[in-house]
Amino acid sequence: MPDTLVQSTALKGGEFLIKEDTIENTFIPEEINEEQQMVRDMVRDFLNNEIIPSLERLEVQEEGLAASLLEKMAELGLLGTHMPEAYGGMAMDTNTNTLICDVFGPAGAFTVSYAAHTGIGMLPILYFGTEEQKEKYLPRLIGGELKAAYCLTEPSSGSDALAAKTRADLSEDGKNYIINGQKMWISNAGFADIFIVFAQIDGDKFTGFIVEKNSKGLTLGAEEKKLGIKGSSTRQVFFENVEVPADNVLGEIGKGHLIAFNALNVGRFKLCALCLGGAKKSISTAVQYANERIQFKQPIANFGAIQYKLAEQTIRIFAAESALYRVSNMMQQKNKSLIANGATFAEAKLKAAEEYAIECALLKVAGSEALDYVIDETLQIHGGMGYSEEGTAARAFRDARINRIYEGTNEINRLLSIDMLLRRAMKGALDIVSPAWEVQKELASMPSFEQAEGRYGAEYKAVKDFKKAVLMVAGAAAKMQMDGLINLKEEQEIIMNVSDMLLDTLLAESMLLRVNKLSTMDTAVNQEAYDAMLKTFITDATARVNKNATDALVSFAEGDLLRTMLMGLKRFTKYTPTNVKKARRLIAKALIEKNEYCF
Image 1 (cartoon, helix red, strand yellow):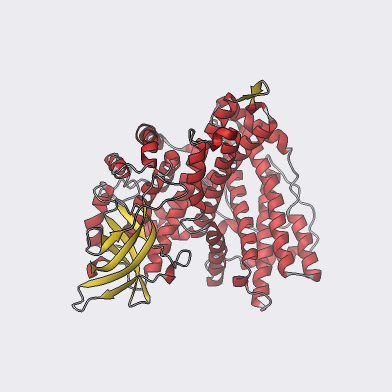
Image 2: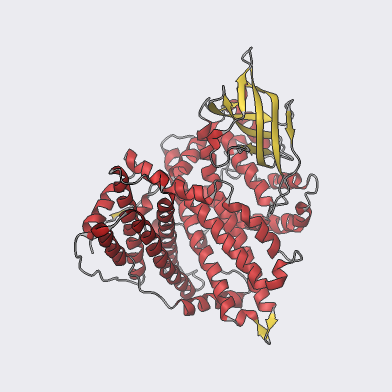
């Protein structure tokens, strides 16, 4: 079979679809250095000593508790690990910041307070603030003196953020903007000191502002009664003739969408890390209960149905985690390259996150949906006790559900991933046309059988074929649109199919690179279990890719064209299935023996 994928050393955003990566370019969590281990231990100690004991008090929203915990984090420097030293930050690299979020994942609803403050609350100022704005606000945000919130969503504008109706009109003397409107679902609103607010100047210029809490006319609604994340503050924010100094305009007038969207790129990435950290803790909870719960005179951990759940939880987390740290390293290398070429700290951070916006959108979906599966099955393993508020399973179940909604719903992120991919192709920033054309030519030929070689030869071939399947379906759909036969804006089901294929491809390749790299390291804990996870994931992913591709193809193609592509799809989904029952039991055995998540 001809190799239609170009070899690569350093991948740009979205290039994982058309280029092959190497283990040398891949960072995995098993290779964190000594300094990163120290940071991990510090965060873990803070989590165990300060956050976990406070979860019940946070749940009832004890006044001042969340703010005081943020201040304690500031004392350790943990609110500024991603900020430049010039403003009091620690300027840690991307991989270390990813690790911090990962370890902090079990913090429950407090992760919302932390992420809203350090992410969408601070990053807009770092990315788009004037030097005066940065000097005024960033040191106090990093030091915990000020807490931040982000005001984007309105009753009539959620996913369609640019439809916001909040207005900002310049005063007659030109010194202030007068803001009128309403924001809702605002995290940290109950204790925030500054708000990043988006409003329409003159009704049609979407613009960002920095608004201080003590501004006259700014009022808060009552705390929302939410399904989960009860330990976080969520309120409406009302603006009635609020005067904001013209100097507090954030970025360019009419360019607020750049602030909103670029802040969300990092927000989606960090959300994935927080979700996975929480999920690993949930797996440990499930394993420990399964080992303790006796039914039919033996621990329920002995039963195949339970072992399936434990293993599948682990596979999904391991796959998403592999992609998380791989993309983290991509952003870190891009950041270093930009700084070496003269970019400022803020410019490098902004452009590196923007470069991998496709991957960030996919990771948000992967992390939140893996967490949902994990906490659901942890509750199921607990049986009736899982439904009781006496344990932690019920609260985790309630808290996790929001992750598929905020930072852009998972549906929006799926659509965005393909939209961004096609836009980059149309602009010439990403050449998917040539590889897609090569796949089309391959469909018309009868290639000789390609023998998979090496320890992971079959898995490398499977990943390569996944990419060909994505290119085939996406290319054919794009051609149909160019010919005026379909309008992809009205065919969201097709886009969702392709997005899920793209996500499976990213996860499968990332997992393969990680497992292969582990096989070369002396520190590998259980290579047999790693191999079992990889082969089980690719077995299942092969079926999903086939199903998603088939559903997409039959929705827009017919006749000889459909038959040709379905034959090609059959060729691209030929991975030999592994014995998934045996593989999952092997994975579960490792967990049960360690009595915790151990990968």
